[in-house]
Image (cartoon, rainbow, N blue to C red; front, top):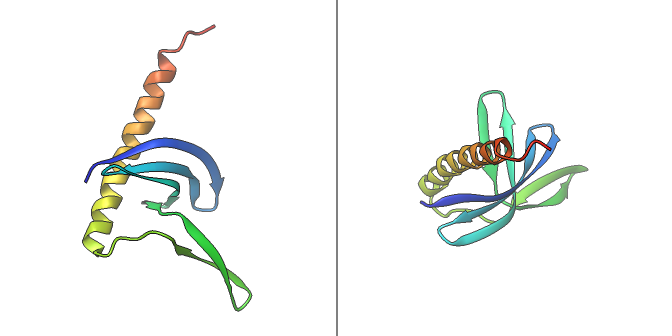
Length: 98
């Protein structure tokens, strides 16, 4: 599975670290979420909120039919995110200091 992070915007709230645009095998998905909690990290697909007994809940607008594909995507997306952050650090270190 070919996964690339095309854009990332930091937005920290609870487990949410930021929003990203993800390309998966040529399909671009905007407004994915990046979460971290303790030693866990995951990418969420765009979602929509709904009210259930006075509580706000969320459901994903995109999903894999096969759970195995879901977990392959998660691993590939986390690797792509690490590459993206490494690339951003590299680009910042090469900027002119003035």
